[in-house]
Length: 155
Length: 177
Image (cartoon, rainbow over the protein chains, first blue to last red):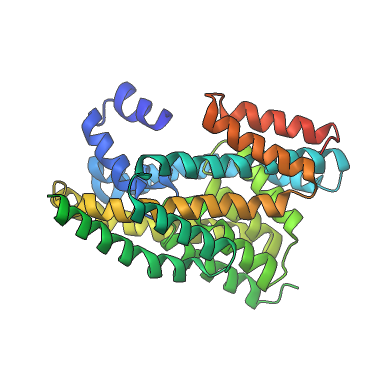
């Protein structure tokens, strides 16, 4: 992960454990992870100005490049070859997402409640097609409450 | 198809889902797909799958890029910029505010409990997202087989996702899907 290499190894802005803290915060906050990491590294170093600087550096240039390349492709999306290539990539990328979810769920497989909430979230989105807001705010509080009860019993 | 209210509706919706996009970009995909393909008909499933393929294969902030392409489809360049801001603005603000709080409660036991409760739900959402995108992208049984193969290979081998995306793109380009 190159964000760590730059912030910790090359520039020595932060040490490893500070960086690990930031990553763990970002993993359970909303939004694109890399943006969160940029905001937190910037905030840690220079406050508000640092945050703004980090976000522009992390986002603006990659965004401009990515958007230009992408729009160029979209311009030619009517070409059969390009459409077929994009179709193949989309099919692969969908499979990768499924695998990512399964892999990150595996450490929780021995907790029946965790499996149940994962299955509920999956089903409510895939089959019931409920809005994300409804699913998230319906399930997460209950899931956290159950985790709390489990924790109290264990400890 | 794009009255003046369309860009506003899209931007507002993206700002809302990005504020609750725990786990990042994958969790919001089904919701955004329903909004732009299902509810409003601004694009087809095929368009949405194309944009998804592009955002996944171009390096860079792929959630923001994905939403910018969606914004572009609805309202051209201003739509792309508005969607980008709607995607990273609200989470940025939330991060900035919560960063200080997080420092203060770093070792509090509730953090672990919140994570234990949150992670399984998020992972269910990520798997759902993959399934919804597979449904949008997989127009033939061979494409379904490619999605399945990509999932199995990711779980069973250490092959880099980049190679798999290249392979998938090549199979598609050769007209095999």
